[in-house]
Length: 203
Image (cartoon, rainbow, N blue to C red):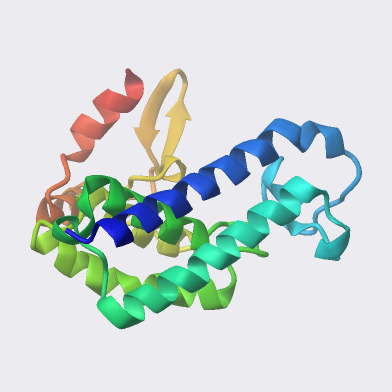
């Protein structure tokens, strides 16, 4: 176990979460001061504020933290590969996934083509890590489905909320998604079937 690396991953993920929470806590203070150009939902559309130098401090802090974490993770992966459970522990692999997840945000100022390309290069590494018990299946599934969503492609694992809609008061899989195909993808990496996922979501 590399405790130093584990600690750095956890510290960076905590800094990310703290920056996002501070941003969410203050977002209403800036409603009406910025008109976004994309369809990013409120309040995340604030992260598109331009020029960024004039953005509120909480907005700039989120962008700075994600940018720094992404650059750091990019170097780590290039030098050491994907950090697995035996190297950094469960909290370490959760932290690595959080950092990677945020590089592919639907907000254009964060989910840049370069960052999405970096996410894509991590997919084969995550697949190997899942196969070897070094990463959780849902880590891989979230990253893959995010990339599909950014490219306007069908979900592969249906782990994101966008793969579901409400039919009356009931949550159902989107009608354009094939449950048998998704179940096979889920089975291959050790995720529970769609029927179980729907039971969980229907609570």
